[in-house]
Length: 178
Image 1: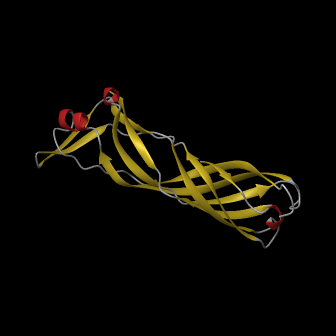
Image 2: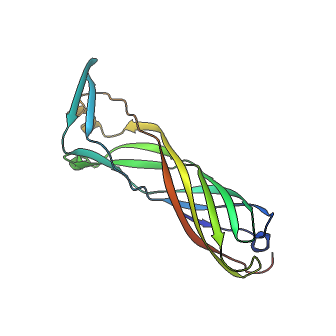
């Protein structure tokens, strides 16, 4: 996750709380298992289609961060954004269908950041590490040709949730003391 954010530069010292907002760019490193057909026409099956899969596109959204400086150099942050919509694109033998579906991603994140330089420095780079809980809602197939020819009719979609590591780098820049 990349974020462009603004915060008050002189509020970056031990004991300070901060709230900021900005643009988030999410670039999932996704993978999928082969397509598994669990039911055809209401009859249970367990068919795995070899050489099938899907990947997620990148997405942009607006986000908000709330944090607290534990020391002059270490801050804990909670990050959440408006859930962006990701396109699900076929891979392997499904690549010919292009976009096959979409889903909204939720990924609240807890970060710990180390800020270099003094709290009053004009330019203050930081490095962060944390964890994000990721899950999807509003999953749906949007490609009628894919649904009719591969899935043989109306289909429901499910996705898995996961815990994922987050790495963060950036800087703050104080144009003036305010």
